[in-house]
Length: 319
Image 1 (cartoon, rainbow, N blue to C red):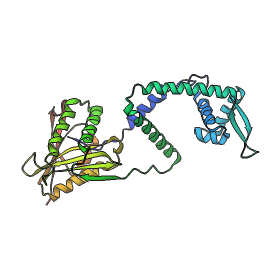
Image 2: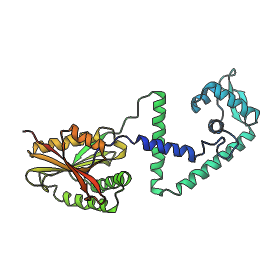
Image 3: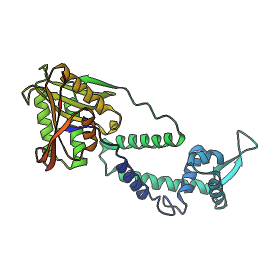
Image 4: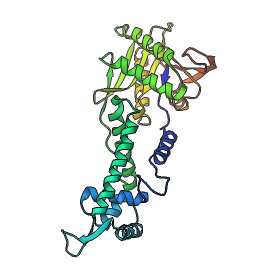
């Protein structure tokens, strides 16, 4: 079974972003249990965290135009939430600070937000809390980088390792199970099939015709691919268990691993490489075809526990 690179999950991220906006209340005219619009609530939060801010800095933090911030600030001053004071850094400048009323309003906002996040986290396993935190921070930073036109954060170095090493089997099975459960509805039958198949194969890694490659980033396996040189016979290599973690889809790692596998088959002088996948994995199909694989047949099947349109690809080894 092969899960090569798929297109970036743009639509899924868009859908999740819209749901976040709605669930957090940004579609309503007021926010966080106050009578204030979202921009004013965020202004109070930023001023409260910094102690005092100039209107110019507030514009930058809120990503709003000066005219919009000026009108909002004037309303907050008139309603008693903010006060304008002389800047401690520049006597000619002005800064915005919270009044006693503004501090009370901010306390209410913080309590509301804390309860909202706390209740949401109760519906998520504790083991996943750090992943939620890291994912949101990474995505927010990426959006900021796009807006500011700066270079993206450098991806941690990824190494390609051959053969067995501790954890590779578990991670390969996990990546397969999670990806296909989400995209194809595969369940325990599929996960067990991958686990048992890979476990049996790893016991044969001492044979020179078999090889496993894994991409490792900061000690974590993030992609795998296998060439099984025994199970098909007739000097045919079987490309199996090709999976790339969601974080690396679109990075070129799939092509890099596929090239490693094809080069190995050429060195071992196999006559042909075959693989089985199924209809709908369009990005994977493009990757195979770019590597000179040809689809030989397409027919319904249930070898992975759910009925799909199975596809068989092959690539001749040129000598």
